Structure formats: structure tokens, C-alpha cells
Image (cartoon, rainbow, N blue to C red; front, side, top):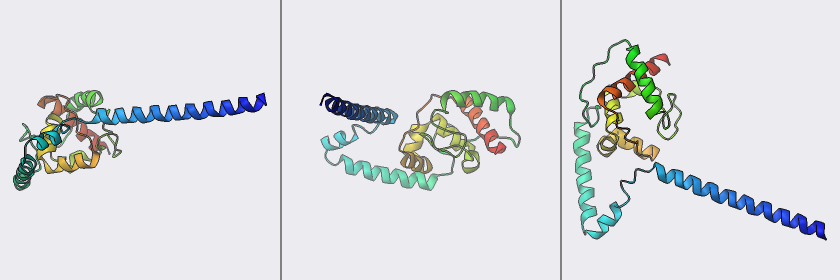
Length: 186
């Protein structure tokens, strides 16, 4: 009898530990998912509810902005970079600086392959996007995902706002050169 009680107790303890572990994992993943959110839209619904008609105005304004952006979309994105001169050859020193910056600021969310982590894989990005677009996305991710059609699609697909890493134009140019080198090596 004592042996059966021990088996039942052991079984209940094991089941309880499994439940606790599952609960802890669920809380961890929920916290991780929440921390990846930019939090920019958290109060938008409350603000719209407080002011009658605001939701309709925003929708109309957003539609007009989307039409203007689509008409003016030149593939360079939104931000300070309007022209980038890239040579046919890779600037190895600049690419080396870009590699260091990429590893410190970008590699937590992006792979150099086509594999998605948090954000999209970056293999072939310099062949799909203009250099100005890439630099503007690095420097100005919030405005890009609000105004640039391609960046909006990426946000909808990956469900995570790219973090602004406070990269200046010079550093963004170095990261671009590193990405060019990566794409040429493939």
C-alpha cells in the first residue's frame, strides 16, 4: 500500500512539475514576444475611442499618404539618403567596418543567408533593393515602415518593427558595403 502511495505521489509530482514548466515557458515566450514589439500602436485604439471621427480621419489620411507614396516611390525609401555611389568593386576596408557593425547591431535579428530569425534573411538584399533604400531602412526604420510600401510589406510579413540602432550615414554605408560583399560571395 505504501508503495502504491509513493507511485501516485511521484506521478502527481511529475505532472505538477510538467505543468509548472509549461506555464513558465508560456510566460517566457509571451514576455519575449511582447519585448519585440515597438509599442508605438498601444494607445492608438484608446485615442481613437476618445475622439469621435478620429479613426475615420486617420484611415483617410493614411490612404492619401499611401497613394502619394506609391506615386512617388522611386525605390529609394524614406530618409536622409537620396544618392549613394557604389563602385563595381568592394571596398574591403569599408566592408570590414561594416562587418563589425553588423555583428554588433544587426546579427541578433538578421542572418546573412535567406533564413529568417526575427527579421528577414539578408542574402541577396543588395540585388533586390537600391543602396539608398537599404541605408534608409538601417538609419530610419520607423519612418520607412510607416511610409515606404516595401518596408510596410516586410513589417506585415515579419510582424516586428525593426529596432532603430541609431546608426549614422557613414556606418550605414559600411554595413551596405558588407552586405554587398556578402552578396558577391554567394
